[in-house]
Structures are given as C-alpha cells and as structure tokens.
Amino acid sequence: MANGRVLIALVIFTLLNTNIDAKVYTRCQLTRELLKNGFSKTFMSNWVCLIEQESLRNTSALVEKNARRKYYGLFQIGSEWCKEGRKGGKCDIACEALLDEDIRDDGACAQKVQEMEGFKYWPKWVSRCKGQVLPDVQKCPDWQNPPSRASPPRNKRFLRIKRLAVSRPRMAKRSLHTKYRLQ
Image 1 (tube, rainbow, N blue to C red):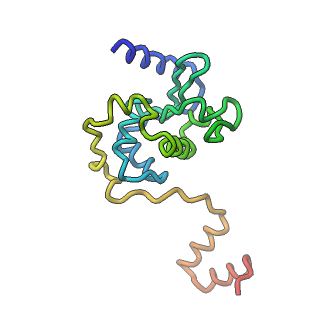
Image 2: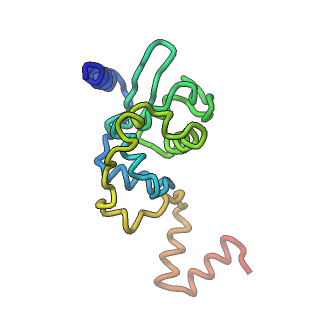
Image 3: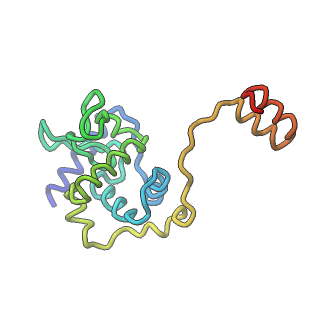
C-alpha cells in the first residue's frame, strides 16, 4: 500500500515538473482511442485495465525505478524499448514520444511488447488484472460502432473537388481530369 502511495506521489511530482502535453482519458475515451488505433476488441478490457493500473490513463506518466530503469507514458513502456533523446530501443522510438498526447506510436510499441513478452511484461497487469474482473468497456458508446481509423490530412484542392462533385458533378470531373490528367 505504501509503495502505491509513493508511486502515485512520484507520478504527480513528475507531471508537475514536466512541460509535456498530457491527456488523462476517461475509460470510454481510452477505449475509443485504442479502437481507433487498431487494438483488437478481444483484449480491450485487458489493455484498459493495464493502462488504468500502470499510468492512471495519463499519457505523460513517467516512473523512475532507478537511474537506469524508467517507464514511460500511458502503457508504462520500459527504457529498453526506447532511447532518450533520439529514436532507438526495441521499438525504435524516442522515449519522449511516449509521453505526449499522440498515442499512435505508444500503441504500436505496446502491441510489440505484448507480442514479444505477453501481458506478463507489466507487473501491475499480473497482480491487478490477470484473473480479476476486468473493466466493462462494452458499455462505452463506441463499442458497437468503433470509430474509423484516422485518415491522413487531405489537401485543400482535393476537398474542394470533392465538394464540387456533390454539387456539380460535371465540373468536378473536368477539374480532376485537368489536375490529375485522368483519362
């Protein structure tokens, strides 16, 4: 119990002394983000439990066990999987990238950890999630209709042509032929 309080105090202290954009998710927001980033529904409750236990759903959680062992971000990924200050480690990612609001790279690395080590890599999953009642994420609004994956930004010209296609199909077709030399 005392270790838990020390850990929470350490996380809070770290957050107060770090200039990183942080996001603390609700359970359903977290579920939505994980679904959007390609996490399987099959293990969703395990992922949510793991994140709740490891980082309290906080993207900027940083825990230093000692000078050589640090755990970063939402998934509390260990320093052997990343490199401070530049890309590296088993996930070929900068550790600082695991502390921002963008969880795409965090999720990809966490899935790699899980594939190679299993959920047993995370001690709090083993002690607080394995064999326990897991969070009921099926009650979240996005469970039945998961959000589509984020698409890359489109250029303004393409969006204008798309709007034209709805309002004036012939003009849009001509615009596409001119711009992209379609035949």
